[in-house]
Image (tube, rainbow, N blue to C red; front, side, top):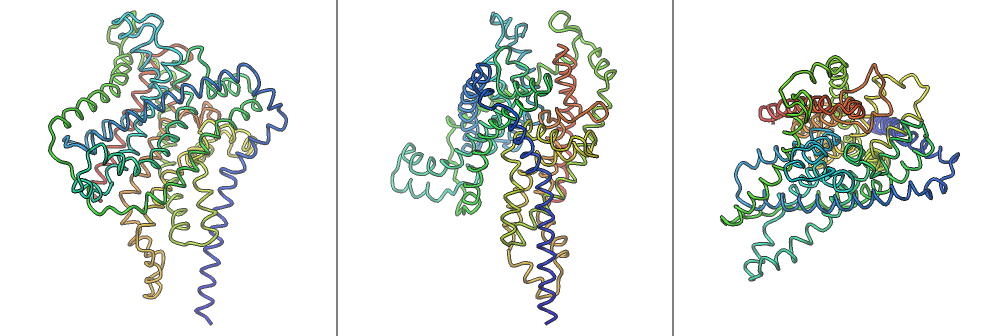
Length: 530
């Protein structure tokens, strides 16, 4: 009787915790989103979406996003093949270098493109390009620079863990390389590739950093939304645009959920065998070097720009831009960014671990509901989440405080770290808790002595993800920050609006340096403890 009572008490506590988490997600994600969408009731939606300006922005957003996605995915595919399917050396270093674009805001990529191919860009003057590369191709190229590392990491991860056994069987059967690709590789990659395409498309179509910098008169929906809300305080129209931007993100989320379990259950019987082929390896190096130039030319360009007196009039080295940025509060805003990034990296990671334990190690019908709510943020672009927070939390005690920025960043970036630890917990013996209960070992002891030590590498990656993205995000906080809690990244848009690109370049360098240091610090920890 007492044993049955103890089990009932444990179930009640577990269910209560899950209900508490569900309530939290209602207030953190669902209610703000519904509040934003409810404002459309006072807006003539048909009148908004039928205007020439909206139709043109929608058409241009779709056109440039489709183009950038095709280029980005093709580039990522060639790059992932070059690293995963050849014998190039120093793959760890190459992976690190190729993901550097993920450590700076998208608007910084647009700024680097201006320095290279703008009206006064050094390459524009060298090749005689008049007018600069503003508009469609400027946005497309800048978006590729910003998004291809994500596509590369996703495709590289798929290729790295592909089972080599079918290829050995196909070779024995005499199938050519072309036949092996269409019979084995393409079917294996088809579903993950769909997820990659929608993920990149969503990144590009919801980003306003690159279009804001290099778009010129080529208006996209996120820029239109930013101008309507920030410049005209038209929240109703902003909500309509936000609803449109939710559509591709929602489709990408559905596809990701549909394909994730299948990918996780894949069994690798034997690693893919890479044979010696010098011509193939040389071709791989050409691809890698080309992409590295694409990655580091913009970064090197705005690194130079940060320390010249006035580009391109006076190219003499100077610290005037750094001094001006500091005098306008760069150090104070850097402190704000560090506070936000550190708090979010710890609080977000703890919440993700607790949430993942309740959904992956303590299963019930309520777990499925909690899991679905936990990954909802995958389908909400940062600019939409920020706007929904403005409408829902305005007038509350946390509005305009650091707590608001902690919350919005934690929610904006929560889904990916949560899925990391969810998948890690799911791979550990599911009977562990039952065995522990039979031996008198508490769940807490199993968590602290078994689960967390086995997940150390994943936990460090989660903290890194929260920290890096919180340091460089602009979209999620642009509607919520004020002078007292303003993150450093928002100074880039401020300087861009004042046409002080040199100061904006200096701020971008600070963010890059902080994120690189953070990445190196976590790399040292992983080498020591994992």
